[in-house]
Length: 297
Image 1: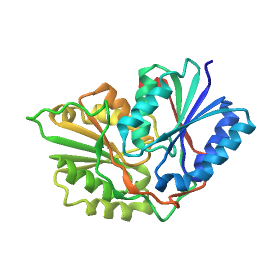
Image 2 (image 1 turned 90 degrees about the horizontal axis):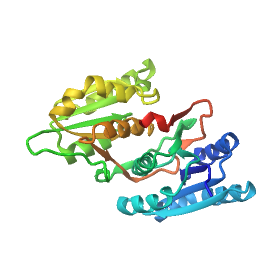
Image 3 (image 1 turned 90 degrees about the vertical axis):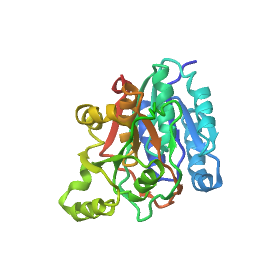
Image 4 (image 1 turned 120 degrees about the vertical axis):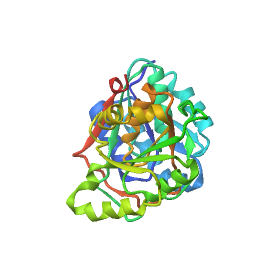
């Protein structure tokens, strides 16, 4: 039997629960695929919300399938995701990336596009972000099946879409030692209110040599993709190019699309070792962002 399937990843954030409730009212899906990370540092925080979703699914006669994953084992993550997603069928499917880590986002996109499913990606921002953010960057990783082609006679170019997360940018820079680095800064950081903060952010990265900043808008469809296609094509051809999204997660969709067209580029994900229980507050229901499967064609 083919289901209208809702794919999500368990989290302790309020927007995890509320987005599922709201999306069910809109899409009436009949199956939930719930990925969750089984390490205690994640499960101890998300288990309560997992129970609430199980209760919600039972009440509304929704089939639910839970898949336990290990956070830093992308080979097993890919294998498990492939086992589940390769048999979805030809109905409509929904991928909620709001609380999904980027390596799982990319893996789901790889499988959904490979199987040519009809799907919609959904992204919700919170009402606000807490005072505590993810910290203690982990070692950056190249993405399975999307790690690019690297030529020995070429220097490395690192392209990062970023908010104001300088710790992970430095982690990427010192790990890959690129010849050139391009930071794609979110427009939201260009308001007058945040002008001083933006300038401080740029100054804090001054030790990175051969560094350029450009303004982008992750929330506008194809903004990053079109910018890279029109402004960075010559750089992509000249360098071994790495792409890393550490700003809004919706930027990951733009990088994935660009990588599909330019498979010589490599996608990098930069995880953190420590995640805050107070990372975000609420959900902003006025601003829901989505991309259909046609976006990736």
